[in-house]
Image (cartoon, chains in turn purple, red):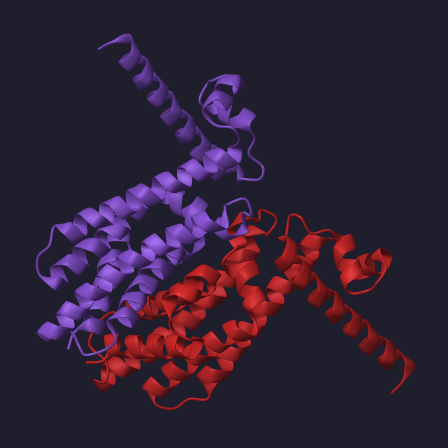
Length: 206
Length: 206
């Protein structure tokens, strides 16, 4: 490994450490109350070093947001590409969405359930992320259409059905993510995930 | 009407005006950036008068929160009490929940979808509101149980089913409440409301 390559890897590792520290600090203190000093302290770097990598805490926030969105869509993409029977693909994609939540709770808390209050997120970025999501929903609805054509699913507007499945997933995550609600639900993560998938399929089937 | 009674009514009107102004200001500026001065200006009252009615903007926020929660539960209660066939009651309660959203978008934006970030909301208050909601969900699940006993609905855990119907409603509202998502949904408020109720009933039926 050459010096250049080693430097590149070190920079990448440091960038990673900063992002992880920022995520923790944002979650603990809330975005507004977090300062670059807190983040520097958390990852044991000088403030100057931090600013070499990210211009501002807004920059850090946006980098984390895009990273999460990219990972989520990448994981969904992969599951869609595995192919198979319609019902099986739906189940797999739904499971993956829930698993992504389990692996990335901070992402949901910071960017999905809490995002609307932050005015520095460029309108185009918000819109382009939603558009990307909607394209996946479009593909999801094409899957449903296939199921309808095959007679596995009831005849109905596939786009509407795709929206409903997605809304159920988001609503369940929204409630489950809240400590008080979760403790009163009396369902484990696995039970809730299963229940969502079952309910969707039941609502879809002919 | 005596002087005393007139004074009482005037105080009530003024209190109302302050609450409405506060709701608008919180929505426009966000809670953190809102100041008592902004609210006083909005309802054309002196700051001193404002403080006579509410000690702080936190107080105002909590009063608005409780008012909204009470109205929501009052409306649901009324619909539950009207009685009738299980399916009909479910439909009526679901419609009322959606209608409450339409009439009280500010409530949802301020207290439901944005609430988790505010640390001054007393833990007991949050918990007691969730508990109240869960009691309604319990009654909802008893309705579902009746439908299961009658054979209208498929045999399954009624509490789980009640949770899923509620999650679908919340998720749909969460997505619909976001301007960008709403514009991409291509469904009107009425169509979405109908679709939710249909999907729930379809998922429940035997």
